[in-house]
Image (tube, rainbow, N blue to C red):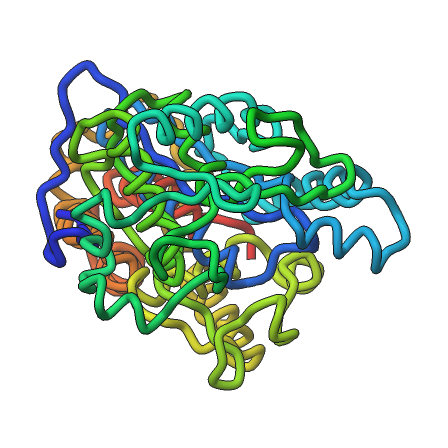
Length: 399
């Protein structure tokens, strides 16, 4: 079962036998180092992918990298370098940080700059089919032509009109958003039928997903702050381009990470940088801390809480000593039967299968698998290895 933002309920995750499940998660705009809020999102989808792969599902897990954006140009000016230097610096850091967090299930990372011609082609199709229009050099998506706009965020167009974007007298409707702009972002400028310029933010992801996944795909993820306008716009663009609904079968969103009661964000300046934390804490400790909340809940980050979680993780590892000792002393090549291990893991599977309830899964691992009184050490050791692999938290690590 997986909570679908579109339906607002938990739904069985239906996987077609023999087919690859396609999951897309919005990646970073590479203008600075990622913070704990980003880490929380990527760690969760990594766990979701690990769990599905453990169940035998073939995964195509894709993350985009936004390397065309006004904020990159602004960062380049602040740092006194070229935008391309900013992109390379922070894209490299992003990959290093994901590796440091042991996020290893991603199939591909796609830079949006490689899809600009696709974006131009898609905008041309939207104009041709009456879903977009040109006004003073800007191409806008015409939300009045898409009757389902607002269905993902569960708001009417009148409600959304209270949250207008890109205020300008040139648009037909308050909710219309830019597909192409006559903005020259240094090194991020292209010729188009509407003059030299750059793509809007939303069309970038649509170009990446439709190119790689086709007209429909399975899971679209990101933090819930992206539901409107970003994911709402992606949905409108994608279904208007293909004429096929739904674009995405499951919209899955994570909660936010707050610091001192406010959302952690670069713009607010209240961030905890991942690479700095990784100097003091291991990937296991950080993942244990982040997975101790349900993925849809907001997290209030604090260093004391992280340190407390680190101690809890260390105690769990120490308690697993009997299983590690068993592994060290055993010489038998005959392991427990797979059925016995699966039966032992039944509560773990129940927790993970119920909307990826990692807090409940971790609690069972600690209380029953590690702290229990079972005498079947071979079975418990095998079960703990599987749980560790799925969560990406090594309960069999050296203390």
